[in-house]
Image (tube, one colour):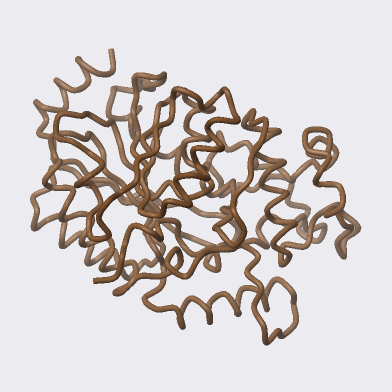
Length: 340
């Protein structure tokens, strides 16, 4: 079986980077498809970003509409923009990732966190659960540590980040160590088994309020390479033969045997074993076609409630699937003992 847990951030060749670009023809001041609480609904203010992160300056250019922007096909520029966004909007003092590791687009990652916050809120009669007592498990925290950063800053949650890749864990731990806002609130755990999602990093005695996960999008390295080439061609608006990944990513971060569908089916099946230890399990689902398999698997495992939450950025549409195995009475007890 392919080692699943070393690729837990989805392939950014599936990300609509052009949605981040200012477009004077459209005069789109607000990215209306992003969550209302998303800090990046408006165009990037490069003056403010440069004040927070002067290292961004060499990468700022004027696009064809004479707006300040960056070359989204250039990996170093994308990485530095991410650093600037994290410093300006999320209070980080330092952030970096090893070369060729995934560099996630911040707005889309923030949307996932905001939608999960809404789900907790709706599960708590409209009262938003916040603070260090709320614990989230990030299945595949990656070298970038993005979900703990956003969740901690926006809602004060604590996090457990898991990954099978020791380099990713070391990078995430370094980010935590360099940023007081994260220290003591985020714990990273190395997953010892390439076949497991929760076993080995999650004990049944623990309680987490939710899990988040980015499955690998592709079923093979060839599929990942072809998609990356299409994305770079689109961003560059010209044909290229050699792909330079603007979003980075190790091969095993971008694909797994069986692709997203098999990944989700296996993770959902294992989550049943921890069904009384977590209120909401969740994952991104990039391919609409995988929802049928997801729903079939959850029905067969007798999930008590399933939510499909749509998300959008530019022309790209995805969704979150969230599920719980807790009965109504168990949910009530959870609210009274964990969220009050």
